[in-house]
Image (cartoon, rainbow, N blue to C red; front, side, top):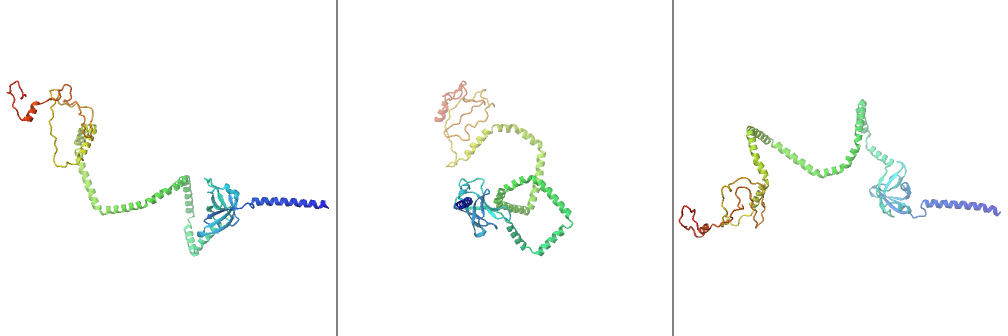
Amino acid sequence: MNHRVVRPLAGLATVLVIVTIVAIAISLFQGGYAAPVPVTVVSQRAGLVMNPDAKVKLLGVQVGRVASIEPVANGRAVIHLEMDASQLAEIPANVDVNIASTTVFGAKSVDLVPPADPSPQKLKPGQVLDAGRVTVEFNTIFQQLTSVLSKIQPEKLNATLGAISSALDGRGEKFGQALSDLDRMLANLDPSLPNLSHDIAVSPPVLTAYADAAPDLVATAGNATRFSQTIVDEQNNLDALLISAIGLGDIGNDVIGSNRQLLTDALHLLVPTTLLTNRYNEALTCTLSGLHRLALEPPLQVPGVTVSIGFMLGLERYRYPANLPKVAASGGPQCLGLPVVPPNTRPPFLIADVGANPAQYGNQGILLNSDGLKQALFGPIDGPPRNTAQIGQPG
C-alpha cells in the first residue's frame, strides 16, 4: 500500500520541481525578479501602431519594454521605457533612438542604435533620449492620400485627365522617343553622379556665401542700372567724346607717322644718356631724396637768407699740365651719407681722377697768404717799389 502511494507522489514532486525550474527561468529571462529602470524617449510622434509592452531592442536583443505613451503638445509623444537594469552597462549614454517596424503594417518597437563614436559614459536611470527617426506607416500614407484626394474636385480631375488624354492621343511614338532620349540622357549622366553628389554636398557653403553677399549684389545691380541710365542720358556727349577721340587719334597718327624716323633717331641718341642715368640711378635717387627732405624742413623764423661768412685758408694752386681737367672718374655711384646726413658730421670727400687732387702727395697744403691777411685787416698797404724781377707786392 505504501509502495503504491510513494511512487505517484515522487513522480508528482518531480513534475512540480521541473515546472518550478522552468517558471523561474522564464521569469528570470523576462526580468521578473529585477526592478526595471525608467528611461524616457521624446519623439516627434509615436506612430500609429506603438502600444505599451512594445519591445525595446539593442542590436536585435530585447533590453526593455514600453511602459506607457504620453501625448504632448505639437503632436509630440513622450514614451516611457522600462529598461533591464543589467543591460544599462552595455548601452552608451549617447545612443541613437529610432522607432521602426519590420513591415509597414507591423507593430512598432524602439530600436537603440549605437553611435559611430560611443560615449564612455553609460545610460543612466531617468535619462531622456530624443528619437531621431520614426518609420512612416501605410496608414499614415493612406490618410495623407485621402486628405489630398478630398481636396480634388471630380469634374476638374475629369477635365484634366481628358486634356492629358487629348494631348497624348496619336503621339505615342513621339512620347516613346522622348522616353528613350531621356533614358540615354540619364545613362550619360550616370557616370557624373558622384561629381553631382559632391557638388550638391559642397553647395550649401557657396549658397550661404551668395546669400550673405546678396545685399551687395543687389546694390551693385542697382548701381549698374543707374550707370547704364546715365550712359543713355549722356549718349550725345559720349558720341561727341568718341568722335573727338577718333579725331585726336587720326591727328596723333599723322604726327607720329610723319616724324617716325626723327623720333626713332632721337630715341637712339638718348640711349647712352638713359644708360648712364640707369647706371647712376642710386646716386640720383639718394640726391633727390635728400632734396625732398630739405624741402620738407620748416621755414626760417625770420624771412631772409642766413649767410655764414668766414675766411678760408688757401690751398695749393693749380699747376699746368698736371691739373688740367679730364673725365676719368670711376667707382660707380656714390651717395656719401645721403639722403640722411647725421648732425655734426661731415661726409667724406670723394677723390676721383678728374685732373685736380688737393690731397695729392707733394702738395704744400695750407699756405698762409700774409699779404691778403694784412690787407683784410688794415686795408691796402703799399709795398716796396716794383721791378721787373718782382711780381706782386711782397710783404
